[in-house]
Structure formats: C-alpha cells, structure tokens
Length: 177
Figure 1: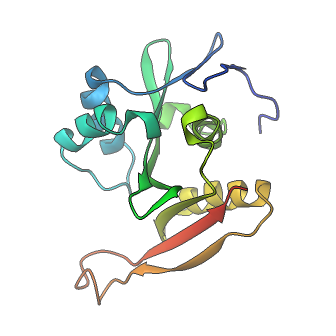
Figure 2 (figure 1 turned 30 degrees about the horizontal axis):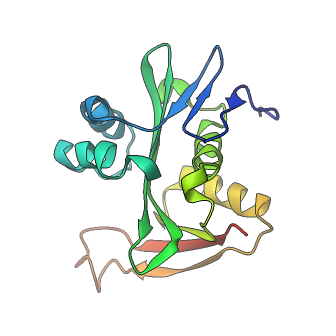
Figure 3 (figure 1 turned 90 degrees about the vertical axis):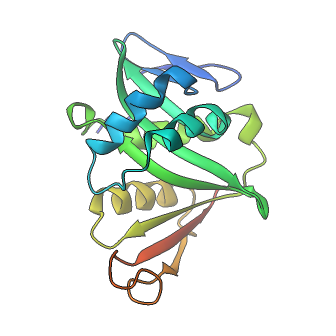
C-alpha cells in the first residue's frame, strides 16, 4: 500500500501532477475515454456515452479524471444532491485494470474532496451492491479515515424496485466533517 501521496496538491484542487499521475477535472474530449473505461470495469453499469459527456461537462466540477502518460487511469463521477447541497453523491468509481492495486481510487476521492468548490461538503453518499467488494473496501477505508461514523441502509431493493433485474443497492453515507 502506498502511504505517501506521489503527487503535489494544487491550491485549488483542480490539478495534481507528478511524474506519474495527473489528477484533473474531466473535459468534453474525455467523454468517449470515460465511456470505454467504465465498460472495462464490471460490475459498473454502462450508461450511454452521452451520459459520460454530460459528466465531463455539466458535472466536471464534481468529477475527477486521472491520467498517466496520456492514458485514462481512473474516473469518479459525482454530483451534489439537489436537496442536500452539502452532500456529494459518488455515482461511479472506475480504475482501469492496468492501474489497480495502487490505492488510486482512494487518492481520487480524497483529491476530489480537497477542491475549494467542495469544501462545504459535510458527507458523501454512494450506493453499492453486495457483490461489489472493491467498492465496499474503498468506502470502508475512506469511512475509517473519517472517523468510522458511516451508516448503511437499503436504497433500492432488488425485488421492490428492480423487479428482480438488478441487485439491491445499499446506500453508504459517510460524514466528512
């Protein structure tokens, strides 16, 4: 496990750079790369490429993309909840197979939350299916670093909401302050 951050934190949180990683807001030209990355990361749900273009434009201030040598290594899509503007909902976390095992997902999440524009965030939420062990590990690790006050509940139930076509989605809410 990497214990020190291998990049320099920019004051505004917009860009992180070292010889290895570039952490930045996505832009419109990243839409297709984001679509391809998510497609390569089961069990993530594949949305339309149009959705990924919207994430890279309309929601770029709450999303983060990581590159290494011009190749997309990871992406987090997130947004502030319209009814709770101090809650950041993390929609998807994707790390390309070749870049796994270096703690990149946790670094992306922590870097995203350092942005000046997100300093008002008091909690993050995400939904995770029972079988998505990588997501559980990531958010439990993040929760532990935040003091371990996270709570889980059922958000969308397999039979009641998905008519048996999708696994139950558990809501994980983690206070950040």
